[in-house]
Length: 324
Image (cartoon, rainbow, N blue to C red):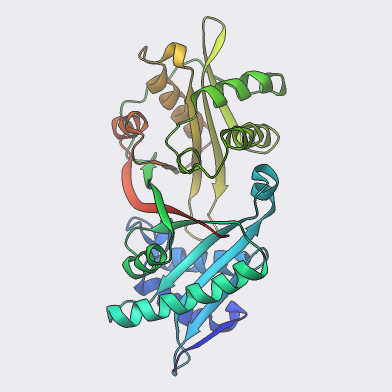
């Protein structure tokens, strides 16, 4: 008999580690170049930390092993931007074995989540899920979740894999006085085939408001914003963050968030210069690895990543479901 309940994950740490070890979860466990024990400890710690903002429901078998879990949270920030009650499905994993049994577990976990959705009067759920999770993806689509995009996660080890990097590219970091120009270039040059643009239930005005606020948050946070200029104007912008994972995997990682090139300068080599300048800035920051996630169909950005030597780590699907 399978038991489904909300619980303190720390009481089942070893069982969850076994689940993560079998059903590879997250960027670090997907990467064979990362120390596996450290990656497991990181993912478990991240899961426990997630309980501060979200909820997790686990499926437990007769042997008291965790064989599946689903984790989700309400997003106040997105709700304020879109004026729709937005929730994110952050975790959705079941132990693989018998496909029919996997789908039963996944269906029950999703039903439990949908009870929470109803109680919270959620308007839309957004899911990002590893493309290898066949049964959870099958159950999501069976329940009306619509696929909007595929995301690739790519990585570059700057201690050994660097190629085609030119030092001496002029760049600077954004200042508060740049805010209006940053808003303008972001709104004009955001990739228009992202899941927010493709889902017509979101108004264009609210999506543009989201990107404008996102730029403001980046400028007012510890994130870094690289700027390259042409003709005394901002021609390209790149946002990244630095995260120290040394406590788990002994790595300092630069996480690339988003790049924008003014359409006036496209086809003039500005894009590749921007990528190289940002890579050089990351190297100057003393990082070991650069991680980047991008929409698979953004062919130009994919090409720049390939030219710099990034390798594919894993892929994710983005799905939405709207509730009446």
